[in-house]
Image 1: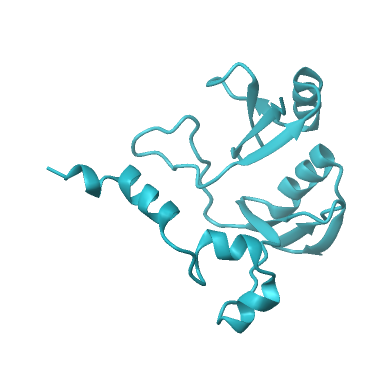
Image 2 (image 1 turned 135 degrees about the vertical axis):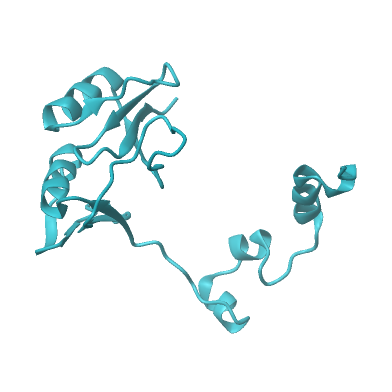
Length: 163
């Protein structure tokens, strides 16, 4: 049996009250990247999320329609969409063989490895738009204020309204 001081919650609290070190969240939050570099750290920036698909071009076209993005790179088995707001780009890579993820998770079925969270202004209108672009509404909807859709390759994505 684990001692109370060895629980994940206790470990999280210890991390929060520990003095700032070069790797601590407190240091990273308040020091500019150049200062971190001098301390032996480099600045890391997430630029792209790559999504596996049975057909990269088909899935890229779906997300281009859904998110109103343009194709930046179009190669035979790899396509990248722009990020007009300067955020994270999406790219798509053809995988063969490809197995659709299951939603919700089922034992001995391909698990979803990740999913996209897409903030919307109007949940009903955004859900209708997603359907018109080629998604399907998932049978399982775990929350009233979120709509889970499946893209043409079976990846779940969530539409949600900020409160």
